[in-house]
Length: 206
Image (cartoon, rainbow, N blue to C red):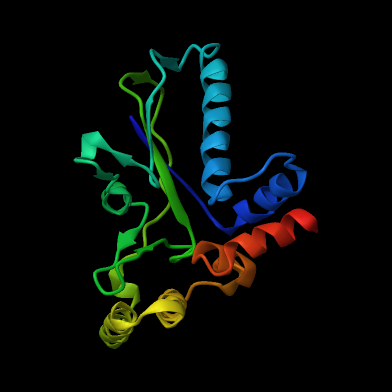
């Protein structure tokens, strides 16, 4: 069994609370460290609970792969997590903007890792949220996405960052994604590395 792990914008509040409570120096990307720690904690708790349930028998802890790390198993590259999301039906991998689009969150979610259980016995199967078909975006919309993506690729520096942000917003508008699911401005700034150190310092000092 393979579990794909991700988060929506709702990770931001517990992450910022974690930063404010931290007494040690944080690294260059404290969100990645926070995610890895929380996945580890959740996995440990789940395995302990599963051991006491007769309908679930986990023989061994799973192999864990994080999307931000490179692995020799993938020729020293990153996990092909977007393709895994598309294959699972979780999201559609757009060939026009090269982003995964979810039915509810659009492009406003992050794929964090994969847990591979070699042997799991369970009754029934996991529920799968509906995927977003590419037909949701019109042919004209796809052309707009492709043009914006090409513009972002040609851009440099801060201009390129803004173009990539606009691409994400454009995909959301064209797919009709509720704005309440979009990342906040603060979250966008962190995600795209805009003054990340200053942002983290402000959060910790708040």
